[in-house]
Image 1: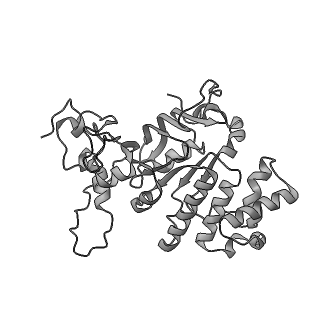
Image 2: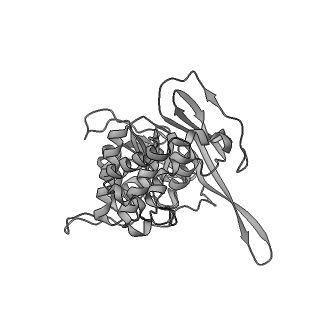
Length: 357
């Protein structure tokens, strides 16, 4: 396993001509945290992302959900290489070639940036207060020498219209806009180069509920218009249900369940996913309230043996404490949907080698 920050030469396969836009294989990201005690100093290895694998197809929106500390944002930042992975592969398809982003040195990433963009969580801190809105949106085109002069102004004005703002506002500064408008500006900055993949790190969590719906609808409209592919990081399941085609549920740096959005909400398999769904607010005051999930989230610096969720799981039995479950196909079809399920779940309750009590 390579140490944090290590890089190697680019890995490009020119023969690969079809398939997923993004393939993540056995992705790991570890941090070394220094613990300062009274008499000694010791370091702890935090497994923020632990052996993560999934595919993302062109035109799809995949949601990454889970509690705070589950590794969602770290995964997103590794994919766009804001963080260097400790191990694993991030195979990205760019104009007919497949590039392993995890192995590229920093100097080789710049040509790929137009195809790979990130929308940050906080619209208040992600925009430079010393730049006008026109400068912020047009900056990626300037950096990559894609437009200048009248063409640059025209493309910025076009993006302002698409996100619902007046082109005359291009000379204003971020402080003159509301939170929802700032997030629209951040979206425009990310999309002005027509990227193939957009990683959205909780893009509406800092906004009011009424504004969230507007921004989510804007993201969906722009996805259809520009044929975008989204990786959506979120902790709000209602947001995920509205915009995502598939959902990957994360716990302690690993995916514990992966399925189509309808299957996740109509027939969740993993006990953790069921607990997340039960925590959703319901508009019916007479509805039965499910008990809250017991215990604290797993400590990424001291993960328990076996399944990381077993100390909090009411359905835990013998193998859960000893053997880590792998992500595999859930047994049987889903009667609610009337067709075989594409569910994948990491839980011993669905492992034929074991018999649950």
